Image 1 (cartoon, rainbow, N blue to C red):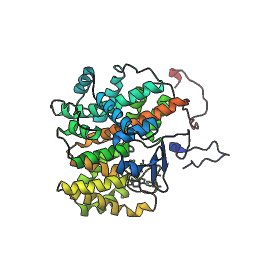
Image 2: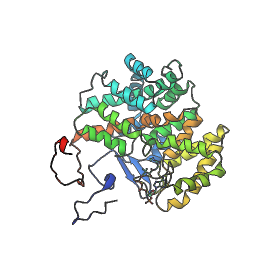
Image 3: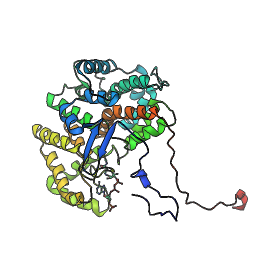
Image 4: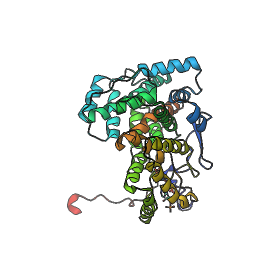
Length: 383
Ligand SMILES: CC(C)(COP(=O)(O)OP(=O)(O)OC[C@H]1O[C@@H](n2cnc3c(N)ncnc32)[C@H](O)[C@@H]1OP(=O)(O)O)[C@@H](O)C(=O)NCCC(=O)NCCS
């Protein structure tokens, strides 16, 4: 929404850069009014139901879906990159009790000291770094999950694909095909989303000609806030606080009485339902039934019912509303929910940075100054 300021009062201000176009992009398109999303022209519904994370990451990075040989090679490359230098493990160990987003940010930052191509901003080097980061981010997240419980780190399993291997390293158990598929879908749904706050942040950093690692560290920082990635963590807490489906309506009423947002609802771009939500909704329904805990799905649906009046205002469920319960049912602690978002988003962030470098420009908006008029500096004795 533009600010109230009119032309006679000064320049138009678009607070939060809402509705501002700053660049052209070939990566991702979002129709917020109708609730549609495409990665490089492919509908998120096709990708969520027919693709894999590896295939989707290839699509994002190279612009086209891979053929069978290309996919095999790409998958093998990602597996080869499943390794972290010893000093990164030492850093994670030394801060293992911090919030996992702080640990992830610190470890990715430290990776810049060990990546042989850190300062090489050519597209070829950035693609190689993208592959490395795509494999390293889940390893960092899983290493902390084990270290925090004083467990040995679980080595990656060559026989498992990206999503299944991540779940295995997180939990120590080979996931069922259904669980692996649900995590795979989750990572696809989180892989890219235009110039959301974290990807925009990555582009701002890239705009200064800083390197890919610097951009991704900044993106991780931006993702950590509750208005962005942090929502999944808060939704699960909300479901626990609600406790039983019949409490949902009062809970929502109380939040709204205090003008507090209901987590997992609302979106800067979508006015219709976030198209990613439906895939996670079905997953939560099945998983919570399979695991003999249908209550979680029922609680979430009761919150949806209580929020129905807000749908008219364009406030609907977003992807994070259902994601947290999926992680929870896998026994993953809540503070790891946002890092899982990062695991999915890493290729998307990298691709946004690579695109920014293709036609780079310093991103530097303006603010309208509303502070004091120019005034005289007085010596401290005269104040
Ligand atoms: C994501 C979010 C920051 C978008 O904010 P935004 O673009 O500034 O939202 P808007 O200002 O356009 O919201 C329009 C109206 O809907 C209300 N609204 C937005 N999100 C809401 C929510 N989650 N619960 C209740 N009301 C909400 C706003 O209060 C506003 O009402 P008002 O005009 O009476 O003040 C916001 O919806 C939010 O905080 N959601 C919860 C956190 C979350 O789930 N984040 C993950 C996003 S993927």
